[in-house]
Image (cartoon, rainbow, N blue to C red; front, side):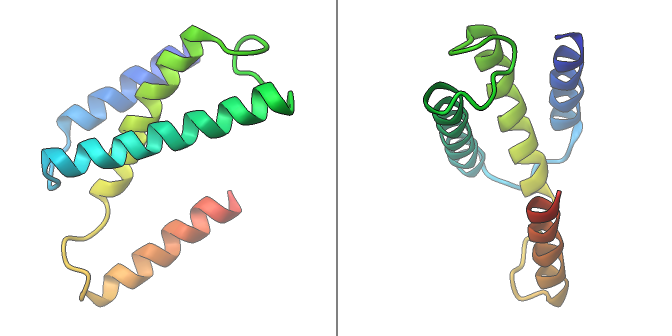
Amino acid sequence: MLLMAVTVIVFSVSFLLMPKRLSGLEMYTTSLFAVFFGLSTDLFLDVKYHLYGYFDVGVDGLAYVFIVFIYVTVNLLVFKRIPDTSSDLGAGRLYRRMVALFLFV
């Protein structure tokens, strides 16, 4: 529980200190998608298949709050790394690295 709280604080502070290149609407919509997708997947796997629970079996309110903060900040930190221009040749390498990171880790 302490590690989760420290993680939320570290990610939130790093998000607040980073320069923001996305508009408020872009940050809001991507964060909303990440939260809904992540929580629905976690809830489905936990309640229907009993695969895992973060702190307790079933729906846990405290885990819900922590996970919302983690999903939002990690999502925005990842999108900060995406280049502004899609015509840049380095953007393709970055996208391939990000996909490989998320698929193989």
